Image 1 (cartoon, rainbow, N blue to C red):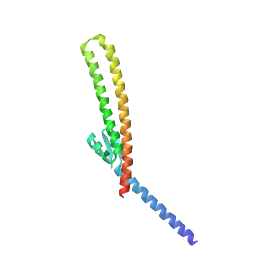
Image 2 (tube, helix red, strand yellow):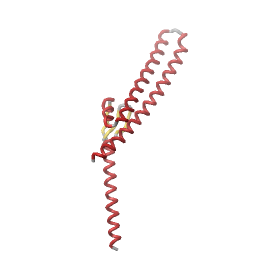
Image 3 (cartoon, rainbow, N blue to C red):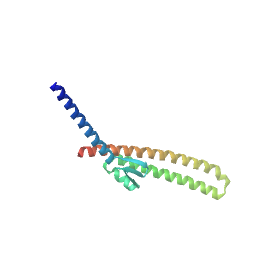
Image 4 (cartoon, rainbow, N blue to C red):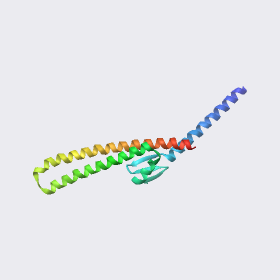
Length: 146
């Protein structure tokens, strides 16, 4: 009978220790991880932040995350330039009034728009991967500091 009480007491202490560890990890996760609201807005510790400079600062603790974040930003810039170039070409064609250029510039504009969209989608994927790596590295780093 005494050993049953001893086992049940041991079991309860073990369950309590696991619950405390789980709460500790959950608090660490809530405090140190980020999630994106848009490419330049994110939330950390229930506070919303905006701006590329602040987001870039979050990646300092994760070399792999910073590398993917930088690639994402570069691809987003390329997509924007492609999109603006296609739009400028279309506007120039319409303003010039030269009907011979309508068809070629329509297809060029369509192509630059498609390429821009694909590159932008890739940039979003890279940004999401960067945030995942950053959050993983943050959990590892801050778990080790405890």
